[in-house]
Image (tube, rainbow, N blue to C red; front, side, top):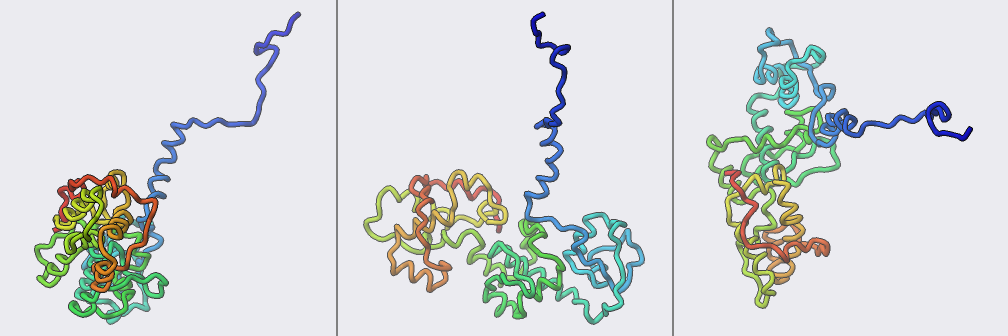
Length: 302
């Protein structure tokens, strides 16, 4: 009788191999991937929940009360956002004293310090003891009188790495109650615009290749347009990278091509540029830039 390959003659071998369902597996992994893909997000285990005494009504306690009892502002926001979880209750710390708790004014100045850094440099100040420290603008030290070490201001309002506290909150702050000195300083420039600055202040050198005129026009238009959250690094529209490439590296190449060495040196000396740009051969999108400003959009900062 000839061999017939059916279930009765072959059987069903057990290879010990499991084949996953790609679609269902992706759905199972989605929340893990969403969480891991973000640089922000604070674990309740990472915050300091100690206070000098428990508030009389945990379900109605607020930021002012919690910070007055010694909880740091960012930590309190995380705890309240989590819904005052009983899994992570507040607890008293006998070592805390009323004198060690920052005043509401000190807390306000620390928040402003961080906010100013987010708007102008798109980063939080460095923590005490951190090897990575931000360059602090003279405006904070001299005009605002905030001359303590940058980590002191972070420590007053945050017990964890501040980078985990989503900095996009800065986008929703209103300016109507700000002092004139601050508004004037913001008018000098915010993060994301420094490399555009030269195009509103300097004329290109004679004999610049005609093919770069569109790129120059685009850079000048953005430099003179109202500052936008679509351009700010904290909230930049990801489509900009697709349509224009890396802005800073393309602008650096364009600056090297269209301005004289003397002008560039002057820009650095005057702090219009942080330093002289370095040639980036792989960033050549600027050569094809259209002159129209398609990145500012409607999300104005001011």
